[in-house]
Image (cartoon, rainbow, N blue to C red; front, side, top):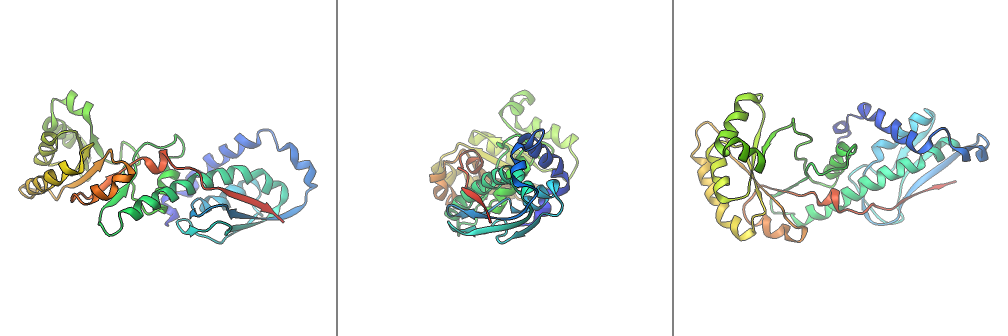
Amino acid sequence: MNALFLALPSLEPQLRHWLEEDIGRGDLSAAALGGKAGRAHWIARRDGVFCGGVLVPPLFGLLDRQIAVRLLVADGEPVRAGQTLLELEGSAAALVAGERTALNLAMRLSGVATATAALVASLAGSGVALADTRKTTPGLRVLEKYAVRCGGGVNHRLGLDDAAMLKENHLAWAGGVAPAIAAVRASAPWPSRLIVEAETEQEAEAAVAAGADGVLLDNFSPAALVALVPRLRALASQRQGAGPVVLEASGVQPEQLAAYAATGIDLISTSAPVTRSPWLDISMRFS
């Protein structure tokens, strides 16, 4: 997994803030350590997909630049219960001070990556990708979307400035699908993609006819999509000057993924890995 996606230097203020949240005016337990050096390692407590290791060196580096971190598992790799994930060495006070923050981040992100991987596995061989949504924890969006990628998913919009997505309110206030698309096309930079969230077959067909780059088919049943998708493909093939349309299903329950993947769509978007995943239990042991 490419850590450049995270733009790690830009995350330093957040890492520092999270450390300060836990440490406050100073770790009162540090006096018991007597300035000693120590070693520590992380152990996975259950099977899953690891994510968050890339944050460990910069996080502990904010406490003590002499902390040495040896990553034994890369982000995105599967792990087994009892497996050692990484090793640390340096100031015992710094190791203790950063322990909780580092583990909290890694357990949260590993949980998202693990949940994503399970859903992606159910789509294996279908050619349908699994995408995330903007339903993310405030302050953790980039990290949670990184975790989705580590689990084998793809990212939808990071924010409102990535692509235009016209939803129910946009369409109502603009007076319909075609006027809404025309207004966005007239103002957005030319490389911008435009997606329409359709709640009816008529909205989906209007979106394709008006030149939308993608149509998000919200809360359609698999049976409805089996009939609708070929019509939308045929309609898209008749467009002048527009490329193929990306057809996306949303409002899909995890247990329905295989049924939706068989309808001919390109993409399934779901918030489930972020909003429903448990943390992956990881512990830090000192030696």
